[in-house]
Amino acid sequence: MVEGEAVEQVKRDAKTHLKENHAEGVVTNLKDRYTNVSCQNECGYTVPIGVKNVAGIECPDCGHDNFSPLLEQYVFWRITENK
Image (cartoon, rainbow, N blue to C red; front, side, top):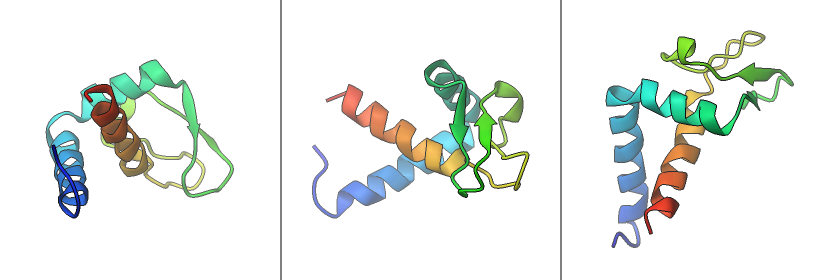
C-alpha cells in the first residue's frame, strides 16, 4: 500500500510511464469512456477523443493539449479499480 507523501510521486511516475509507453492504449481506453471532453483550458470547446491524436488530445479551437489532465483521471481510475 502507498501512503502519505509517496502517493503523489507514485502518481507522477505512473503518468510519466503511461505517457511515454502506453499513450495509444490510454487514449483508446478514454475513447471507450467518452466520445468528447470539455477543453481543460476553459475555452468552451468540446474536444473529440480519437486515436488519431495519440500525441495528445489537442483542442482544435485554442490548441491546449488535454492529455495530461485526462491522464490524471485515467491513473485515478486504474488505482481505484485495482483496490
